[in-house]
Structures are given as structure tokens and as C-alpha cells.
Length: 167
Image (cartoon, rainbow, N blue to C red; front, top):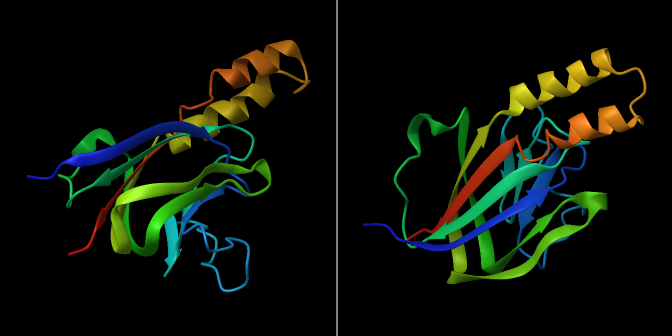
């Protein structure tokens, strides 16, 4: 039976509609990275996983979990699911581009090696639709009313990233 070893829950600010999970020794902006996940939930290469978001101006909620082996599938609780693999040297970082680094050098119990990754997403379309409606209701996006309603959308788009060391 699989056991969860780690769980982090945090807000993430997507840059260019994505955030990146990678080995800390890798520069996520260096040439040779994955293609942006346009029209897809994830895009990967050997040492990076890019998660596609539908947001640029609204923070999303990320739950990151490390497991000792493949966790049970989450079923219908999520709208989308994608799978991938990534090589990590016992640590990972989460980059938000110009918004900074959400996590730097998080030590993994699984150590160095190949990790399977399962990514789930929820409420992506709902948040995008509600954000567009804000512009219909408020002429000035700098108004207090607009900003207060925008704040209610923070964290509604959500992601679950589960990873475990391949045996």
C-alpha cells in the first residue's frame, strides 16, 4: 500500500500561463527546455516538468505530494489528468518565472533518480470564465470592486502534483 511522504500546499503565480517543477541545478529558462504546454496540461523533458495554467494574473493553488510508490488514482475529483517522468537529484524547485521561486531545493525522501509524475487540474475553465466576466461587469480593472472580486478567484484554479521514485 502506498504511503504519502510529503505534502505541500501553496499559492503559485503562473508566468506565461505556466509554472515549472525542476531539479534545482537546472535553469528552467535555459535553451533546451520543454516546449510551453500550450493546449496541454504538461510538457516535460528529462529534468523539467512545465505545468500549463489558464491564468497569468490570478494565483493558483498547488498541492505537491511525494509518495513512496504510485498512489491510487484520484478519480473524478479533478477535471484533467496528465502523466510524465522527470529525473531529480534528490531535490526539486518550483519556478514561477519573473514572479520568483515558490520552492527552492526541497529535499525528497526518494533521493536521486527517475520519478513518475501525475498531474491533476481542476476549475481551469471556470476561473477563466469568471475572470472574463469581471471585465464585463467593471469598466475599470483598477477599481476596488474589480480587485475585490478578482481576489475571490485566487486559488480556485487548482493543481495536484504527485511524484514517486520509479523502482
